[in-house]
Image (cartoon, rainbow, N blue to C red; front, side, top):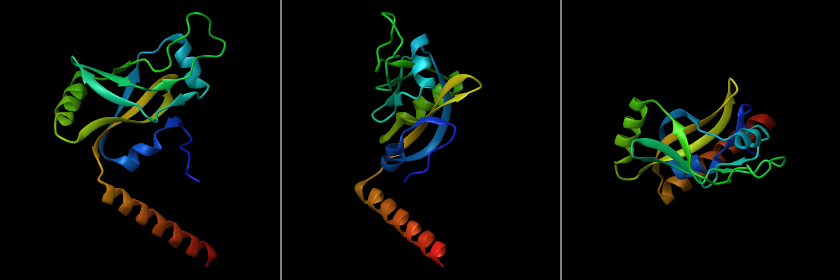
Amino acid sequence: MAKKDPGAIATNRKARHDFHIEETFEAGMVLKGTEIKSIRAGRVNLKDSFARVYKGEAYVHNLHISEYTQGNQFNHEPTRARKLLLHRKEINQLIGQTQQKGYSLVPLKMYIKNGVAKLLIGIGRGKKKYDKREDLKQKAMKRDVERALKDY
């Protein structure tokens, strides 16, 4: 069973399997009232989400935040594009890195810090199939060694 990060509301486990993460950024998000209530309830899915820089502003797409159960007609749309709050210098850095071939912005983890929802995004380079197989082999060997040490 995978270890769960105690401070994280949602993590994207598939991201580190599919990408070599080279650098991470912490970003705030522009949210509606019912969205933050659903986030605090832990009803978030990062699985198919991705980030993109458009007209000098960063957005996260396909981030699924379930509708708030006690919400009324002012409830939010679950997969709408949400603006990320980053400094200009960070956005320029993201633009420069993602223009290189094979690099993309991947949401890694969502958590609450000082009462504010934050999204950890990473600049990732896609892994090849053989890289993924090698990672699985390494993980299996490490698990076997730890099991042997525990039994010893």
